[in-house]
Length: 239
Length: 175
Image (cartoon, rainbow over all chains, first blue to last red; front, side):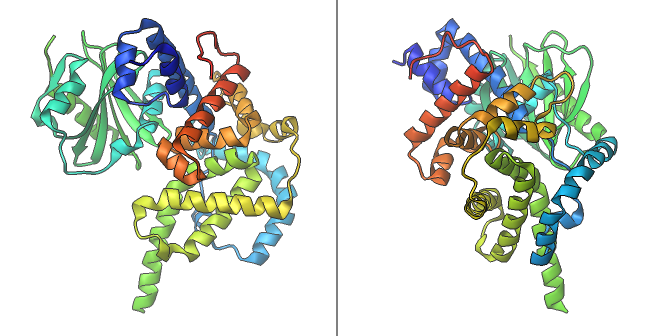
């Protein structure tokens, strides 16, 4: 049986470790649950801190085309480039070329959580077995009607001190992630684009909110909202 | 003619691949080197090497760890070339202030400065885990360490970061 010190050492090494033994300890220890919540908040900040702004690449700057001579020249030009950088920064920011930094919001925490589970995004035709899906949804006291689409990933994740269902549903626009946030309320639908993730958070009267995210190329916002509404319609509350 | 079309397709695929991975690779190189200009050079050189060696990449899904390994090697080469022996952390923080600065209302600048001060042996596995999404086993393979050593470094790294940022550490376990 794991004690509190062992649990906290494991959480400090990997706050998102999904080891069932860790979860079992956390479920029976309020202090460690609070401790984990604090670490996850810190982890969200850490992840945002590491995502420093990067100027968007021009077409020619990604594929290596620079010759050695050009590279030598570029080193000697660094002083001038440094001086020009401040001007370029202003231009880039004004032009919306910088990657957005997320703010400490529900959306930012959802995005930070996504970044911690990159394996969830795999395109796959293999559905999650129904008992596994039911288990992932149990904490939110909800089940998912099959009309939602094929669920390729289902886990119950710790998010803001609560276990919440984290699903990936395969749709025509590719995999979308769904988080059923029964403990988080929003007053109106919220759209966000952060760190390459595009999403919407819908209020669910009496049941918190529902976050639906896609990543990569920006999808049509209406399509994403339609998918979110479709998933919301497929949720069947059991408690 | 067909060769040229094939070459263009190959080039386009490589370009798309690099473009999609570039932001995270650049961030990784930045946290590794703590020098934005050096990070850009390292990533550029690494992509040049990757372009030349692209036939050795059999699975595009493995492109990210493949490129990351090339970047680590390229950084080590640049380190040898420039013989960077001593580093004044405060100077580094001051020099990279524009990059470390956070958006208004966000309290990330202090955490970024703390990351700069974290020893490389703790900083690198932490960046691999948090930014690149690597598992403990993947970090161990990349850094040629045991899983236990990786977990110890991650634990110590977070402990030091949290202490530097004034986090409440009263409930922390002894090592």
